[in-house]
Image (cartoon, rainbow, N blue to C red; front, top):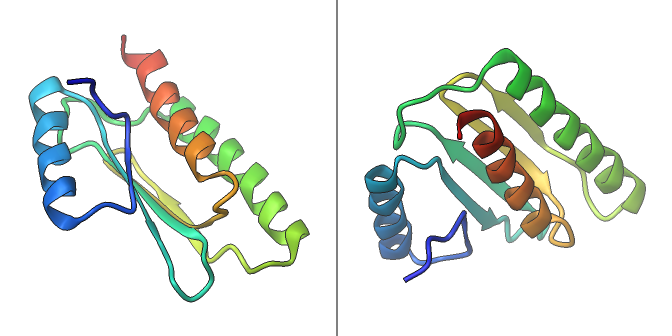
Length: 117
């Protein structure tokens, strides 16, 4: 069974199973859930499942990813980007477009792995 870098629009038991797998493999837990009101995604990355924290450099790289997404969402006029927060142990992003959610989650995962492998 292949490891999934993130889960999108899954059932609660699938998130629980993925969380346990992330913990076992020492990987960050990333999930994306759609907001039915605006059809954009709430994405969360949690490092409680692994033994590292985001460095200041990683936080800055993630902010660049978010800024690109904010510009895309605002230019598409479909809905507003609702906010984000990044710290060493947890980050969330509210308003990732459905067009970019997979790429955003992949980039988020790969960024964290580039610094910790």
